[in-house]
Length: 117
Image 1 (cartoon, one colour):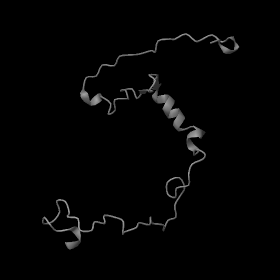
Image 2: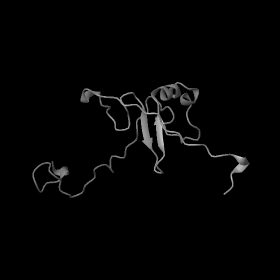
Image 3: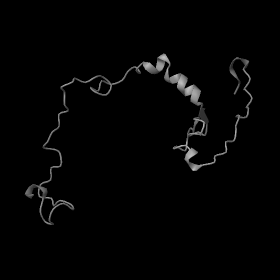
Image 4: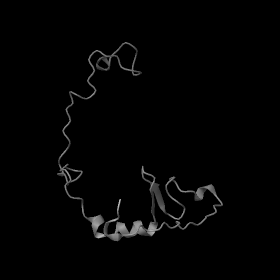
């Protein structure tokens, strides 16, 4: 393959690291993908390492792009669009837990169905 435009591949550089010594187990982060300093890290299925610094993520949280909803979202009332205040979800009560003649499992005396109780 020839490189487009005469571009040379960039040279790889080592990722700067530092060692943090913990004196107590309570200082360990709650997740395996975070560090005590707040840095998040992950890998893609292809093996690429992704490292997000805490400051970088906090800067992105306050960006105008983060305050704008994504385009082409489906209209789901109450989820992607505000629902009406008095609107309650309609539930078909005939389809919920409808068991005809089936014995209940672990509730009530054996051999009796839920409808008998």
